[in-house]
Length: 227
Image (cartoon, rainbow, N blue to C red; front, side, top):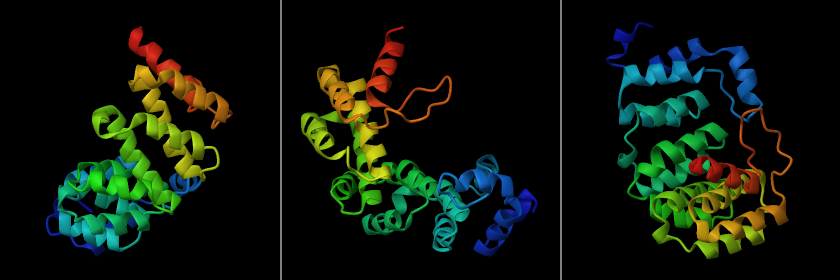
């Protein structure tokens, strides 16, 4: 489909183009990470750039339930147009890791409802929803720490991270590392918690990449800032 053919685009037309972009090799790689689609993300972003911002189309694409369509929806929506309850429903529907990640980072973080949702989600009994709350909290650690009780967060991480389900554990670990990186007064305790819990200590890390094991992650990022 030529780029000029997208001016009056329908959901069906976009779904047809997405179907044409499916690549079995890309899908095989994505499925190893729990993402059931085969569209190269560069091609997906190029399509989004042609479509530009289209809230109604984004909502229609989301409703299809298709992972590639939902990723595209996150790129062409207006984040501030969603109501609080809409976002709450969406995060509970977003089971594919990449959809969940993009929803939180590209949409919820820009929403006027983000703080209210952060507090509600972090305490949710669904670990995937709770991981979204922790992801929003991690952003606050860097950008708005004044709204947080950092010592209290470390208490929760110390008590709950070791036995948390994978997605929630990963989000809590990121928060732990970010506290240690950004706040020198809490750094020693953050490293100590990481050492004692040992979460992600043996996580396979590619050459040139930083380990997600919090003590290593914190130490390396602080070192880089001082080099």
